[in-house]
Length: 468
Image (cartoon, rainbow, N blue to C red):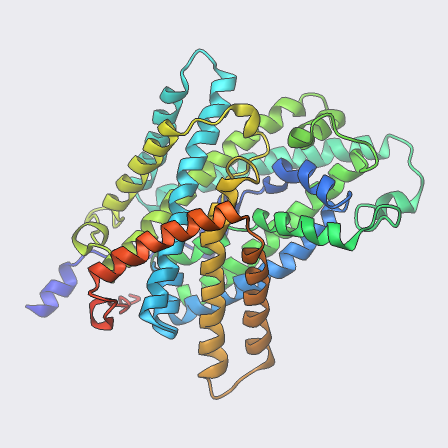
């Protein structure tokens, strides 16, 4: 009887290759991530955009490494929720999971808003609300079909954005080498310009540049659908973070050569579109459409991550198991969660309409997404994401350094460096963001305490399914 029950219980289907995971991570973070924040980073960093992108990459690689290593130990859709709950404490695991819910639930809503507003600009005769319903419906319909369908869509989106980036590089090279410059110093100024260098400004801009990387953590929520998760999740997480970092650095490097920092932008919010237009006039419109495509991919990816996180928490009884812990027996996806996230995202998109001129620099994705540019929305997302990042780094420190007999220097330095970097960024959030975040966390902790009768460990199950 028990064996029959085990066999008949639907599970997530392991079908994602290492390449699928990397594509998912790249799409959620966005290969065009720095395009929307270029002007702001240039202003804040006094022209040293490349430097801030590279510094941020180093900082996030520590956390990406911790995520990947913990996925080796716990290949679970619950991701950080499971890592912290298993290694440190069930209460802290629940708090970490709830902080991620805020991040993951806001992402799809913001993507729907951004796509709908941008589409409304392209086709103003179609009302915003119609576009919102359209994008929410497409995101949900594709994600309900199964993880391989989402992976195929990610491949197409990556190819499209890759083509635009390649065209930009070619147009940029033609412009740079077709115009006079002042020798070798011209090519090194984006990294270091002694006339404009200000270390405080550079590190201040780095706190914004980190937003370009948030989202790589979503890869770990696919652990139960990945082939060889103990190997591939680590590789995919680190490689995605590194790939996005190098690609972003190249994009802004070319942009800075086309438009030197000493020359002000007509509008910092849309700086990259002006840069692209200077390189080749048609790219001005193409870049705007590309950002729409990028946010489409991010919306799909964010909904996948949210659905898998809710599934992990539902299966563990931290949320109502009958709804959130259920899987579709045919397609092996948490269909209830996909529909739930889609409905909430659509509701939020219909209630919150952002004027398009306020979204021009707002990047939505991965991970790290932004709303009202660098206002309350962005910081609310970072509030939850950075708590989860700190939790995962601590879990990695506990597991690989405190509990292992063979301790290594890397097991000490990497998670602690990742933890303190995230802590500094979290402490730098604005007061309004912290207030809203605390309210969200308070509501979640109150619900969790009621649901688990005071977070009794026996009521939160962190057991993992078999890897077969």
